[in-house]
Image (cartoon, rainbow, N blue to C red; front, side):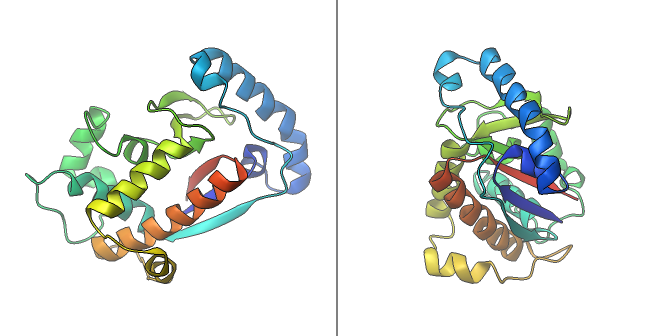
Length: 208
């Protein structure tokens, strides 16, 4: 199960609005440290309102998040046969595991495949850094990820906004067919990215 969260990072890590207010200073200090560790061109873009009232989650279902990434991975590998269903863990797919170990090499969808969090800004690289809770993760660019998501649709589904809205209702249980799971995952992430871009806020994926 996974959800895409759009809002202040303090709200993502907190269990209540009151706890989020307490975490806000720590998140802002974390952001200052991150900005100091990256190139100035990227640092200048890492700005958002940790006091924003916007906080919304988008449900991927049981297999939508995994299905979307596995679909994107195979969609650009014409030399490989796409699996029919989504495995219980992506690491159970040998091709995915091998690519993951090399950080996916040269891929059209690096922001989508490698990251589970994206910050406001438009930059081509991903940043490996500890999150505010101490867990190390690949952090990407919200605009770059949204562009890669759009490109994936252009190359594969060629769907429109009405279809995306319908896909939000597509069941994506454990072991779902990869196409249905990818559609559910795409719709959830596309909706989340749209809101995050409009509000200028981080987008983070929570896996449970």
